[in-house]
Image (cartoon, rainbow, N blue to C red; front, side, top):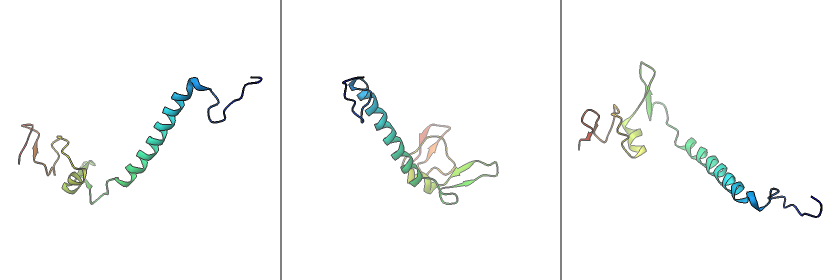
Length: 90
């Protein structure tokens, strides 16, 4: 590439600049998302307990902290969702 100046921040030229920016943005977003997930990680004994079968059973406190009903018929659902009828009891 004689006589052509190569930008060290964008060695591939203008053609791929948008793709490179999108990849950098997604990597940054993914890294920050992982940091947030570590902060909201459920705590054993407080947010859930293990059943005799080995499953995690989330507590009422965890459901309230999460802030919404997932409509899965959870054992400790504070929102009153009934899986059989598909309705929320008030």
